[in-house]
Amino acid sequence: MSSLNVAKFGGTSVANYETINNCASIVIKNTNTKVMVVSAAAGVTNHLVLLANTALTSEQITDVVENIRKIEFAILNKLKKPSEVEDKLFALLDELEKLARHEEINYRDDLKDALMSMGERMSSLLCAAIIREQGSPAINFDIRKVLRTDSKFTEATPDLSNIKALVKQLLIPETEHHIVVTQGFVGADEQGRTTTLGRGGSDFTAALIAEAIGASTCEIWTDVIGVYTTDPRITDKARPLPELSFEEAAEMATFGAKVLHPATMEPALRQNIQVFVGSSKEPDKGGTWIRRDCENEPAFRAVTRRKDQVLVTVKTPKMMYAQGFLERVFSIIAKHELSVDLITTSEIAVSFTLDNPPNSMSEKMNKETLVELSNICEVSVERDFDVVTVVGNNMHSEAGVSSSIFSAIADFNLRMICFGANVHNLSFVVSNSDSEDIVKRLHKALFE
Ligand code: ADP
Ligand code: ASP
Ligand code: MG
Image (tube, rainbow, N blue to C red; front, side, top):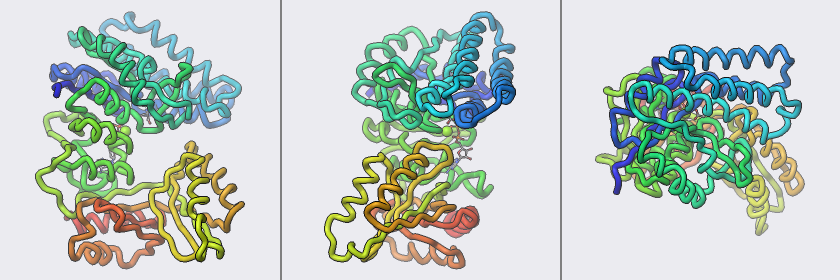
């Protein structure tokens, strides 16, 4: 196995000239780091989402574009030789503004993705310049040359075999003489149209590139010193975990630990790539190592929360003794490429959750799915739920697991409970107004 490394830096890590300098030092210090994957500077993607999804007046567009310009110029103006990249940055900002003013921007997902990619494209240009400033050769590499995806704009799926072949042909040769600085989150379909991997997708990009170049490690540098027992923004009692297994990390990411994009662990698992999570501000504080085998695998590892869930219940009296009903329900869900995470069944009804973040592709697909489902059965939809999950190991075979969990949250209404299908996960569907307190309560009972 090689000792190659891919290092990814999130939005707060590349927010300004000073923080990018920390990132550049981290990259240069580890001579195994061949590829640096970067997010858009903090705040930029949110501005782009606003431009893509809201009908704004011309003045409002000017204001939002101006906010983005300020963030980028603050970095450009501190460079020792701004003239080296100035023209390219101006061209990207022009491209951005043209897309933002396109009359169909709010309706066409291909245009939205082209616009959403601009944050990463500007940030990789500036990060490469800062690495050169620190004395190492670096190039800004357009990831769209290699990160082939399908054409499901805003939530595209990578095409692994093409990515591997293209990386071998176009990216690996560049690593011989340079540190390759490239964009997270962005891809391109077969026709060369820009796509994106969904919010937070840069982690996934880093893992995919690590897999494609045959790296043994992938570092995710962010604003916290590792993966914690729960989101440190929910409770200051959360503490960083020195190690995690691939399965635990995948479960945490899927069930809401925003520190990792849910798909990040897939390439890591396939190729046994060790994933490190740490803080670019405090690289010496260590972080979390995610690997196949951990020294210990405790019953309780973490508590996570995933927001914006809808609970769908489908019901038909015909379900009694009826064969094929579930198949029809799930074929409709599969047709819309939605994934169901939690499900419970009874004799005449099935309830399941769908991810429903505002302005997402899923939200749009959910609406179409529900209309189709109502053609074959009675459908009820309940909103304003979150999912709270206890992640751990062998929870189904440890005595006393359920009592310590349930007694901690006995006074809350649990709308749905899922346990047993997976040894790593016990999940509750709860009202979004209770979820924070439930996380705190569980954290206290299990980790404090
Ligand atoms: P980046 O921009 O670097 O990708 P993100 O904001 O996507 O960073 O992810 C880091 C954030 O994830 C942290 O600031 C933290 O609030 C949140 N987070 C949620 N759950 C966890 C967890 N279990 N451990 C650490 N951070 C978490
Ligand atoms: N910039 C994108 C986002 O904010 C992707 C990422 O940061 O991972 O979602
Ligand atoms: Mg992130």
